[in-house]
Length: 384
Image (cartoon, rainbow, N blue to C red; front, side, top):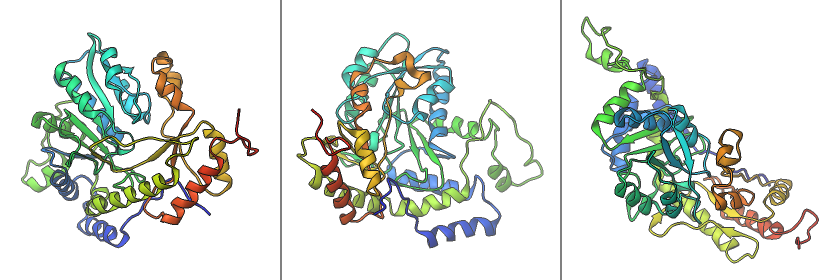
């Protein structure tokens, strides 16, 4: 048995056709495919604006950068964020010399609204919400808190491609939503991301910032033609964050299958639920009411997590951990002890294998191993 945590699935022939078109036209960078994918993403999600970039991390940095510019935040101002996330979330805050203030997580491993309220100060400028594993958690309460306090909401939707809340794609309630199309995400390319602002002015600015602050990108100058296509201005200090047409071409193919793929991921999770629900040594992280999750992850809590990982590895199953409590990392240790539930789950959290190449039998095999080894020491004894 060899069951990996993540294995991306590509529609290879369709993807190769998209890549071939880019190569034949001699246009592989920002251009016709990136624009086509942006339009397709807007049609799929209902967002008014969408800009394709080279990673989800870039999308998050741009979100913070643009809001800081427009709202005139000062260095040292605070953004409330979560300790249970990939470090990109919190690095994006530090990139702009802002201070991450960690609020605790709830049973869904998303921001706890009660603790968010407690962490608000006069220096709070925004809230960063992470949809862990595709889960919406108490997102609607976070939206209310932001509106009541006139705070922009940044949605880290890296896991949420295809997540719907009460039937509508999540994210339009936020000031800006950021998605990831990394190779292991639900809509996999080799890498890429999308930054979706609610404001047309923010969308206009972010397009300049992703191409080094230049007033006209290469594609616009090329299709515009004329003797002065080389003439442009540099209006801001920007970044080399734009997406490219090869990745966008792959994304166009993957988007066609996203709902179908997510439906199968939910089926895999239902099989996990059947095999693990009620086990005394396994707590399943629940999905929030009203959430049709993308099911990027299937997460459990196990008291003997580290021993369970070793036992699964010995049987050819390779789970993961999403994520360590960020306040335990050296650079964020100033907040150690401020999020007790995140600290509690830090040593229990486990993501079981979940990808499109898995079968029902694979899920049953993993579940049987979890049931066999959860709560037991390496020697098969249940710890006292």
